[in-house]
Image 1 (cartoon, rainbow over the protein chains, first blue to last red):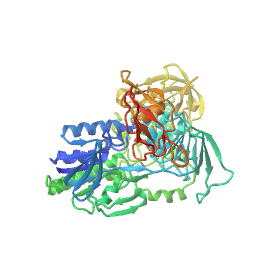
Image 2 (spheres, each protein chain N blue to C red; image 1 turned 30 degrees about the horizontal axis):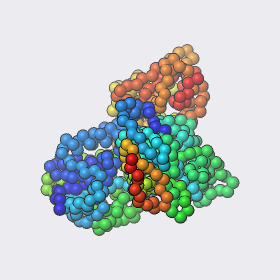
Image 3 (cartoon, rainbow over the protein chains, first blue to last red; image 1 turned 45 degrees about the vertical axis):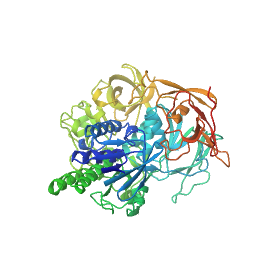
Image 4 (cartoon, helix red, strand yellow; image 1 turned 90 degrees about the vertical axis):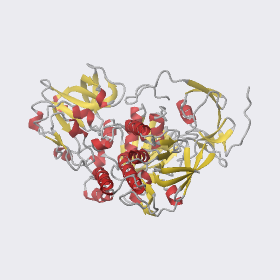
Amino acid sequence: MNKVELAVIGAGPAGLAAAIEAAQLGVKVVVFDENAQPGGQLFKQIHKFFGSREHRAGTRGFRIGQELLAQTEELGVKVNLGSTVFGLDKRNLWVLKEGKTEVYQADAVIVAAGASENALAFPGSTLPGVMTAGAAQTFINLHRVLPGKKVLMVGSGNVGLIVSYQLMQAGAEVVGLVEAAPSIGGYGVHAAKIKRAGVPLFLGHTIAEAIGEHQVESAVLTKLNESFQPIPGSEITLEVDTICIAVGLTPMMELARMAGAELKYVPKLGGHVPVNNDNMETSITGMFVAGDVCGVEEASSAMEEGRLAGVTAAEYLKHIAGKAAADRKALIREQLSAIRNGTFGNKEHLKDKVKEENTLGLRFSGTPSKDELDSCPGVPSEGRLAKGPVAVIECVQEIPCNPCEQVCPKGAIKVGKPITSLPQLTENACNGCASCVTACPGLAIVTVDRTYDENKALVTFPYEYLPLPETGATVHAVNRQGERICYGQVVKVRNNKKADGTVAISLAVPEEYAMEVRSMAKGGTK
Amino acid sequence: MNILDHPILGEVEAAKRKVTLFVNGRSIEAYEGQPIAAALMAVGIKSFRQTARKQQDRGIFCGIGRCTDCMMTVNGEPNVRTCVTSVAEGMVVETQIGLGSWREIPHE
């Protein structure tokens, strides 16, 4: 029997954050993970995270993973890899490592086992070439192999949107994204990125069939009516070799259930979850939960929950007490609620909103509507645009994010609190330096200089594809819908190390397209 | 297809060592440390096994060792999860039929 003070199950963002927090308070922590590498799904997250500086906003997921690992090492936290916890009661863990069973007795346990991707059954869904979006993401970003050349994405939550974008960054073509609901599930800024790349969004559609003898050769989509039933005769066939499924995740609560923790079925959290309070305590004394296992969210909130569970466990183990513990927990709770604010914090109200609103706008098209842009506090006035370079912040949804505010050297952008507020541009303070263009994790900011030339405007936008254009080259400029609307001449290509791969490209375009051009066609040199 | 260059992740290290494995008798190259499934994906092999009753093709589904759809017979051992098992020099990988069976791999 091996004795440990605190056992953490899962070395993903929640588990590692919990281990770090507890270890900082003097707890002896041992982490268990079935994988050969720690980090959970963090190392395949190559996009910049949202949130505030405290949430490491604007930092790419895999770099956050590297930071967490460095901290665990520094603190002497032991991470047992290749170690599958297959049994758990109130205090004991049964661990399978290299074919042998080891038993550990722990004074306290944090279950941070994460979630698994849901499958979707349809004719042909078992064909090779149909895989989860997470699988595709693992292969392109970790193993550096493309699963296919022409991909169909099923599901418009953040996973479906982000993985579509990353598949294109890796060199694949995304021929379409299907969503059964009438609106996009994930962040509009993620949808806008793939829309600008020209990916067709099939909202109100589902996949009817995958066709192929030994592997996927094509996919049939069908339109859905208001009660989500297929409309006969509406079928569309797309030639694809890969179909990615991004239809949600289910918490992996099996170990908590085995240990006897009380469960509750909460559909919006992904299914059955261990009942827990705002200290991350389960119904079992000395057992805590954190991350997707207690409700599917994303890595930023998983890390905050992990920290909270870490402090609570340290308090339970008598390493911290009273006001010190209460203050620490209050601070973490504040940060947790900061990222849970806004349009996406409470999924319940989304449905109601869809009913009320018309079918224009970012959530229905992947493109902000004229109304949305006109009322957006980040978009400068006509008068200001006429005076020279200025930032155009096309951020129209309340998502928790504020790197633009933090990066602006002129203090011209204000988000304030809560961090889900839309960024406000003080247009006369902005000099169009474009620092915010590469800092925005949503790639939703450009700068526009209508005074650039007599009949040319300069549009500077973020770009994260290869190949990069040469200065002086003529390229296809595209609008928010990804349509090639005019030619542009590349005036500047800024690849600042601080921007970590987000390149600022300045295109000279005909003046009348200044407020239309928002990117360039991928590899679209004339 | 291997992704040799990437806008965020950069180029694959040129110094990365390559190993050779044998897939149904065909020799393929893979990067050391790559899972078997990734090596197969890189050369366009998608069908990894056939189901017991209907002989239907199966390939990669979850990619992280949970679903067991990508199981193959590796060095004579059936039911190996190829998405979480690294390649090794001289490894013998075979399409698995049904639940597979244990057998000796003749060594030279």
